[in-house]
Image (tube, rainbow, N blue to C red):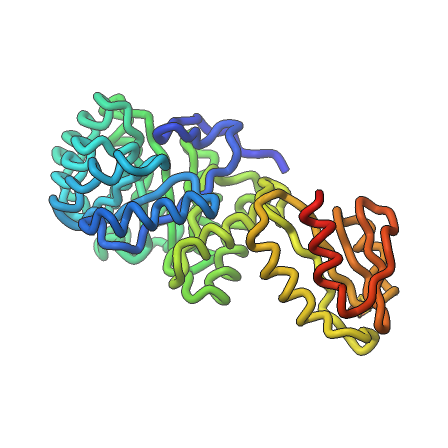
Length: 347
Ligand code: SF4
């Protein structure tokens, strides 16, 4: 795939766009005014691989809390602003690394100009975050949703450009996956700015991961997108896990282990599902990018197991362990998990 060219910008220490790796971001689910809880959640997210954090800024106290939060965390922070431009000014004063403004509800041009001037002075980027759910009802009501989102973003982009501001990122999120894809495709060659991808309000982990993988995955495969946020009704580390699985599936980033496991079928003579679950649980504690295969029989088993860094092809009562493509040992069924994990840990 050829990646769409975009103008890189810096969010704190992280580069978004250009040739930089696709950045994984998430959003805290704590009350930003609860400073200790927010710091803890950001640290937890950093441990699971998140690279940029966004925090909700519903009022002045939340905006002011950013200063204390920033002193205790390493990840760049983005302030999520709706309705009141003064909250953006307060967040900038608190030292935030990026702003997200919702053009559907942020108000008139003079207020946006005030925020842009303050962001420019501090070299802080602004994401124009269009959300289908908060488009003004009277904004091009007869146009298709994707076009309405794109035109709303373009209006704001032109306004910021007229103010000589170019530290811009753009997102065009909807719950509707085809509309989301179309919107990003439409805007991709109209602007030079990095694109933040996401399918909004995607739902609980099972359906949300699928909706996000389809929406974000199709765009990434077309070379579109510089940073991603998976939105799930779940703990935020789950969002980061799904984001990396999307990136790993497309070969765009590597983080942590990849488990290859067969679905099992009537040929299997061991409980492959239970073994794969046990291996997956043990792999959660491993951060190196290893490929581990758990296969149920000799049909595809040896091939997949050989392709992995470490693999097992199981048979009746015993299994063959492979490491880096070589047969390593035959182990008894009771030792499958320990023997496999010992080899993974030794890598
Ligand atoms: S590897 Fe063997 S047990 Fe697993 S699904 Fe394929 S044929 Fe069935």
